[in-house]
Amino acid sequence: MDQQSILITDPSKIYEPEPDNSMYGDEFRNEYGSIRRLFVRSQYYNDHISKSDVVDLFKEWQTDPEYFILRGIVYDKYEQERLLHKSDEEYYTWELPPDYDYLYKFVKASKRGNDVYKKLVNQKLKPIDELQDIMFFDENDPDKRTCALFVTLTYDNKRCNSDKAWKNIGSEFHLFHNNLRKQYGSVEVFRTWETTNHYYPHVHAMIIFRSQNFPVLKHVNKDGTISWRIPYKEKIKISKYWHSSIDIQALMDTNEGVKELTKYITKDLCSDKGDKTNAMIWFHRKQGYSISKGFVEAIQGWNIDFNEPTNYDLINNMCNCNHDVVKWEFLGILRGVDLGFSPNVLVYELKKPPPRVIEMVLQEHKRWNSRRSDRSEYFSIEGGN
Image 1 (tube, rainbow, N blue to C red):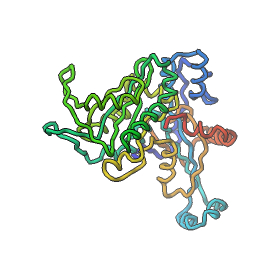
Image 2: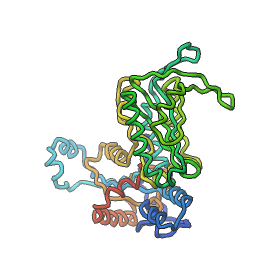
Image 3: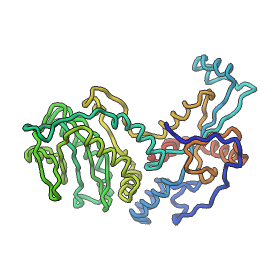
Image 4: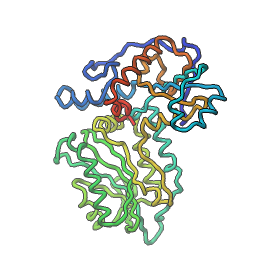
């Protein structure tokens, strides 16, 4: 990961905490003052806040840096080499040598839409962006056919309210995908969500049919631009598997669909529409995107894990990046504003943190160990991954 990392040996580089400046009170926050989704959901479903408040709270949560705390044990080269050859049982039970030292690493957490999230997503999707472009037809071909479609599934506001729509959208799209498989055989999907200005979800998806080719027709849009469509009877056949309006475009090549979807996932994050979309994904505990297991294999004959990145990916990456540290210990999570860290730095390494920081770290480690039952929720930083 191409993160910005800084090794600090001068404690004066750690700033004093700054006061919070927020219009939202303690009812939305944990004991450290960090906004937590479970409190936001509670306040919303008790009719104390609106969806607009949810978006504002999401943006405040997103821009409030929190740091995972890792403590590594540093050994001399001889001791390190000796430990690396121990059995698993010996490795986890050895006694600390007298000459060990600690290295503290503070890793900025991935929160949906923040700089860490964007880096992780770009890293995950890089192989897809670098796929060889596969052409399905040329506009001059007399018999144009394609096995790839780009669909947008909207949500009829009359069916239910937006909260129920977000609750149902995942299972409804899964049913749509299953029905396509029953009708056409193997079908691979790359999909993402988007929200409307009225907070309803809709789906953008690139669909590859392994054993089906569709005739392609040229269509002149109202603004004079050209799009490529499938025959009306084929559109009706596919549309019957979705309860609301559906737009279907025939893809000329793989690059066209992939670029459009990655734009929704990454490039459109910094906008009012992106804030609403990510706030609803966060609030309703949805994955931002998904890629079926055989999607890439269907195009180029190979497969790779493209699942949405998590903070587990981030921690594993950080724990493996320093070969001078034999063993890392996870201590907890603290806010950057309390630690005195610049939000522009993704990784801090401290050999001798200031006493104030050490005291906070030890208190957090004690708190973390006392709340093992909540570890899953806190470790994920609430769907930021």
